[in-house]
Length: 102
Image 1 (cartoon, helix red, strand yellow):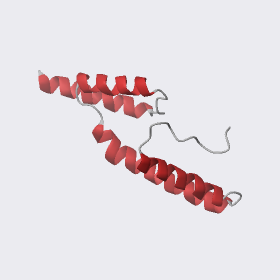
Image 2: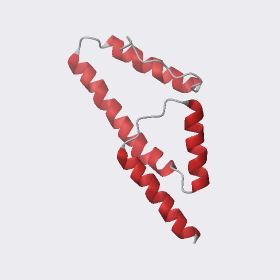
Image 3: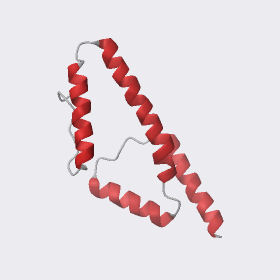
Image 4: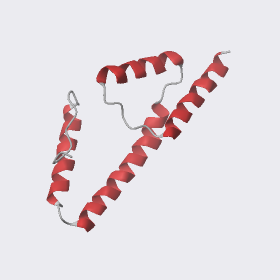
């Protein structure tokens, strides 16, 4: 494993800065299990909030939008680790969208 995570190429400068700050915060706490656990808990909370409150509602509602998203993901490579529940939600969104279209 690398000594620290790599920042993805082409990432927005604002997000690059956030990544650098997170890596620095982790390095500052190296060897301190309690501090690192606090950081991990915070990151998990942020992940859950971002996933549930922002990402899930932003999922495509049509096949065309889904195709665009998948195409963009394919072009950028490095598909994110998507939980199985997300795939179910995506399919449910598409099925509901199809029912509304009919």
